[in-house]
Length: 310
Image 1: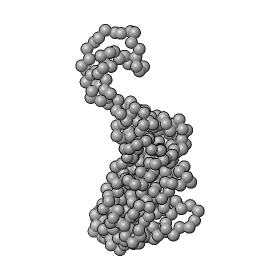
Image 2: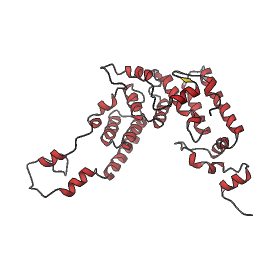
Image 3: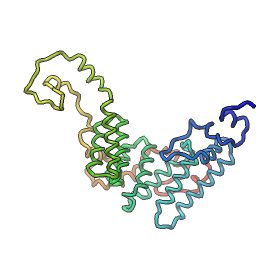
Image 4: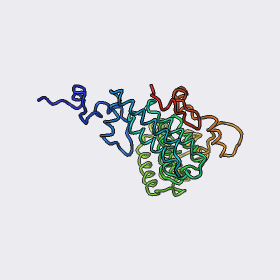
């Protein structure tokens, strides 16, 4: 009997083969904790079955209702349960999952709570939210200003890596050093990540301006009296004049971390919370998406988010 590949086998048989994930694997978003194949296969059936899609939407509705109905001593817990389930049940993410909206509602619910400021679970929701937003730098700055998660190494690692991805290397370096100076835990994990960052920095090619300058430089008289600015580097007056100016953002770590969400007069840093409430991170969640799912600031409106998302 001829043996087909898993995708062809599934398409021909329309039966459960245990390889359903192969058909849609390009659309599956990775999770740090990994995914269970059985759960993934079950979730992906909604791509071809309206019955399974309706089942997922019904289950999500129950989890959202459980958040509002919760009366225990850890109100963050039902949010985490809902987020974890949605991540598993909607592996491709996107608007249909409603995940980004749930992230935003979760962080807004507890950002005034001193109880959860140092809770690693709450910080992880913020970090996952930031990874799904185009305004991630604002979110990281907001966390630092309001002292949310500042004792955890994962905050500094995530923030620094984001700045590195934006080619803001000095800012990334300063963020790592800030976390180490605050002895964020686990400190060894933070130091190891910093070492890896330094190794990557050394392998990065120099900017074109610097490379071209080296290629075009003419031999000049050695100036023994000139103290090198960096070990192994001699900079004379001409070189110093041609050196590019540092980016404004790299001048100081405190300047970046105290970034105001709105330009205005000097207000207490704590007012950033109110600024963020008044001016939500509109680039993170499409206004049409919010209206479509019936979500308003501070609460979830069940009747739309709990219903089917088109």
